[in-house]
Image 1 (cartoon, helix red, strand yellow):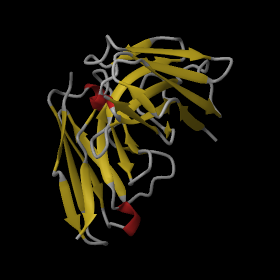
Image 2 (cartoon, chains in turn yellow, orange):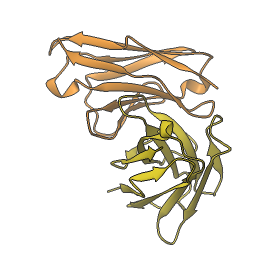
Image 3 (cartoon, chains in turn brown, yellow):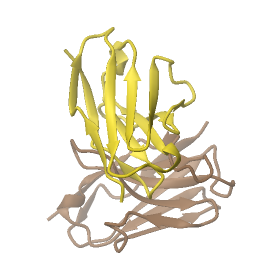
Image 4 (cartoon, one colour):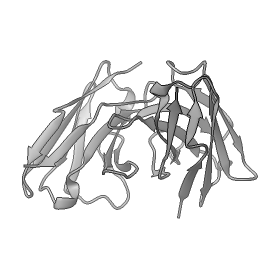
Length: 121
Length: 107
């Protein structure tokens, strides 16, 4: 059974850097074809893909946010980490991590419950 | 970047009716790399369909999807009470993008 859980601050201040951790079980980021993605959803709005890290440590970022995002992993802890710099109130959203196990077909089979991050001004 | 436009924004139907949701891409989607998700209030999205037409594990066969190129659709043949939710399409052929969603609500 694959489970994921996002953790990090519920509130950050404008201009601060957000760091979120995705801890997962039942799957490994060293297994060929597995990747972990980050997706966010502002309240009442649609999903927006942010970043993805592959089993071979390749990293991909949303074009519109690439300068602000960094994704990394700690395979010994079964974790993926997302950092987003220069936070703004418009970045207030529920942030999800999700797993793709389909070897470069980047759709998401399993999702965490999400964590709401509020950016205060 | 491939933009996905979903229509209608809201679909008002009764249980037992058929729902057809549309997802149109701004350019042709490589190898029909389209997925569909269902999201209920307060929950994470759930994968329904990948590869434009393949059902994910455990998804009932009342959910089907088709399409190619720039036009894709998701059909729910007979709406069950638990199917009223928001549905998103996602393309993964040109980076990754999600559509704006279609809400299926009870009429």
